[in-house]
Image (tube, rainbow, N blue to C red):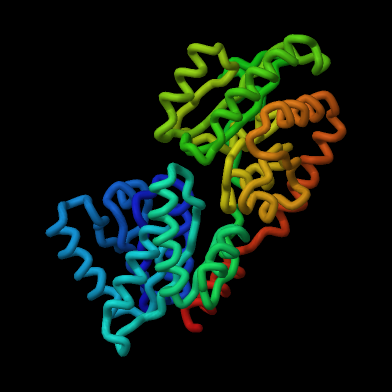
Length: 364
């Protein structure tokens, strides 16, 4: 079987997922070719790869490469596109071929569009193209599946994403906390996120100020200070840095890190303030490490965490602050949450589950 994987610019979860499932499919004897942007190819082991993305080389180059995509599609059994833009391109490439040369077209939707009216309008158009043109639409959360079904998708399901293995820890808790300036009695919260609008950085910032005040007022016995470590990079780095500097937030912007498991294992609480999530891999890693998690109840987060996290409404800093203070003040509740996270982590999909779903989608 020959499969073309198509995805756009990605520096995080989508490309990591494609790399993972591509490797597993190859292990099963499937021939996989990845078509993506050079930025993505540079960060992930996606070979063999064709480097291309519309607009990156002018209109003439775009039309030339779209023709090459059609050629690749016509010589393949399956085109599996990831994301809205890649999904619509994949559908158009496949359906522009003579019917006798159509491969199956599978699209995995990884995100809900977050932005202004014009962006949402364009995204809605791409969703319709995908829903009406793909053989199978997979969504990483139930709400994405519902949207595709409402737009006319004939076959759609929640995409299974293989749960990560328990990541290795290279430094003990005390070393990590000391490196972040967290001294005895200090509270350490950890968030891992691409610094983009859907990650709720305004909620994170506002909550950190409320927490700083409440810990300073002695509401958490024994707490002497707060450090909220945020690991990640993205377009809102400047926004977060400005708020830290001008408002004195107890937040440390760490940038991109290669020691995320160490950070998660050292945290008193792991916190997600996202406006929307699909199947957040970093929270799955946190569960595998037995972290106490507080997360906004958005997108597919509940589908991933089950009872292994304390879920709160999105965009409500006061509510989130109350929940964090409660858990910091009650060690037995936090410990019960850690145990629930470990248990839930054992129930998440395996690589075998994911491969079975993909082969069913690919073969019809």
